[in-house]
Length: 441
Ligand SMILES: [Zn+2]
Image (tube, rainbow, N blue to C red; front, side):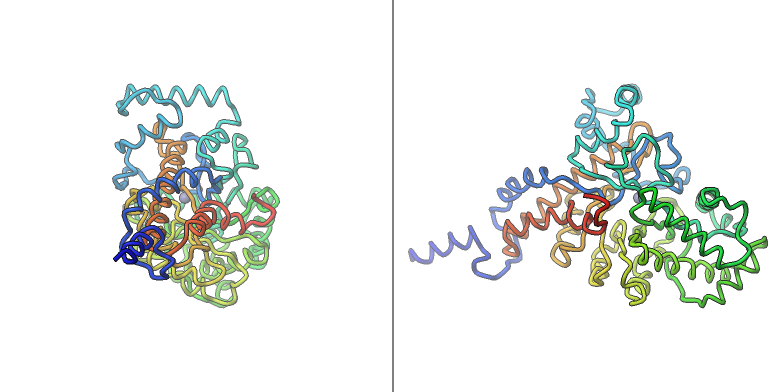
């Protein structure tokens, strides 16, 4: 009898010495959570995906939000968590965001911006214990310190060099997006001193490579695609001759048929992926649902990328699945079985509340804990809900969900506490940093 009760006590305290996981957490889970959270808060973060900057800066992204799109509950400006964010970051003295109170916040930020100058955004990172945060932006501004904000530039625009009349008029979202892709392509052409598209295709490919190389010299650590907003994510495998034929036909004008345009884009995408391998420039791809009312969930589905990710020709390219394929993140984690494929949780922890995000993160950590990275997808939605507040929302949600997921895994006898902290460091910092040797720390 005595022995049995000793065994019972032992099994409650340290279930894994019995080597069998159990299906529910024990009564110790809260205590473990409370022990883990402060340790997790001390881990300096590497934010793998964000768009830092002021709301009046058009370069925070290479695209823009369509007007009046249906934002999910947590991303609306009615989210009461914004009050908590503003209190934590700026000492906001009110308990609501009524227009006259929000004015206080706008003025406070403007005052700090004036006082702190180029240190403003680094100070926001300091407040949240973010060591470095990726700036996925069209171009870098003077006001972000490149030591704290490594640049990830956009590579989509090379796929839209022709007359885009048809592409632009597909729906009201594309009317916003495609002209911005044209603008981006023109900026790259200006950068390389090109007045018009090169007459032949090989020179067009050379132009693409020079942009990648020059951007890398300017500090770019990765190339980013948000192509799911503009066309299906299923990429065919055309020959170079097929791409040359389309280029020849339309480089000097004319509107390509959709199938011709797709063939050309399929080839260019694969070229960019191959160059990403050669130049050690990881390829970031937006893989979640997107904003806008016309985003195609089936065509933008992450699983459409499987033929690219598992193609041995691209085994030297590092792929980062930005936003983890959400809401298909549970299937998508298995794509990370490929050695060169990583999952990033940005946006997921902002769209989902901590309870739901905890379940997704736990499933990821139970599958490929060494292949998952943290990001906020911080973005300046408007003057009141700025990139500052979205940094806070991402960081705080991820830390609490991570502590809870790991506490459950410990309590359910899956891992030790030491292993859990190893997973926490990997997710919040180490795994992402290992993808950019010598470029970030
Ligand atoms: Zn983003």
